[in-house]
Length: 270
Image (cartoon, rainbow, N blue to C red; front, side, top):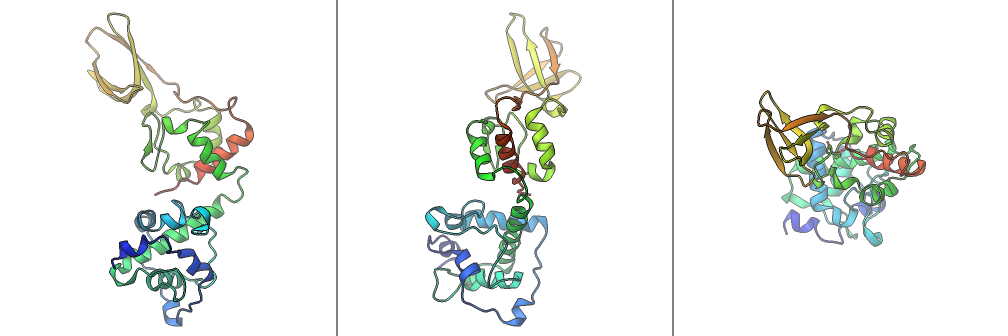
């Protein structure tokens, strides 16, 4: 059976082996250091995890539905305190349990990258432990009441009218995120300015300022269509340097802002 086929079996519960497994790695293996710990390896491990392991363990490692796979973000593994221990669980599986190892089809690098990604899950969980908000509630707000996905992409899903937020937790700290939500117009990068064009017939077109030079500019309208205009075509235009994002100081409660901050701060894909 191929590695892909093995990893997609619903009964493959990685955390069962990590937390409850009864295997014991030999001393030499436990002393092996992970040679793949760069940010590139984190990204590789994340891709592998989401493609092969998320069915049982959830997209972000927080656990599958109906107990299919426990939370892997706690950072505590009973029988695998070292990276080498985690490697052995993933590679060999555990006799007598539902954990099937990836076997010889997987490269050493790919297994180590999975180990590296598991370690980041625990680190990110600890980083959000002291926040006042709920990550789960914030995720629901992002897709629901906050309507954030209409303009923002997260991990390839969402609109393009605002910045990609897939990695916003590495760029902004919780206080900055809260300020962004309450007063998004306080600091607007020129990349997110808008342009308003008034044509000969009086009709008005607005859109995000995608690029601009001496003679022309392009905008992306609300339907995400790209449109080009000449600065010398007779139409008038103006730059609008305020944010198109609504402030949430009035529309969300303080608790809801805290929840949304917790979710946004957890977004660290790079």
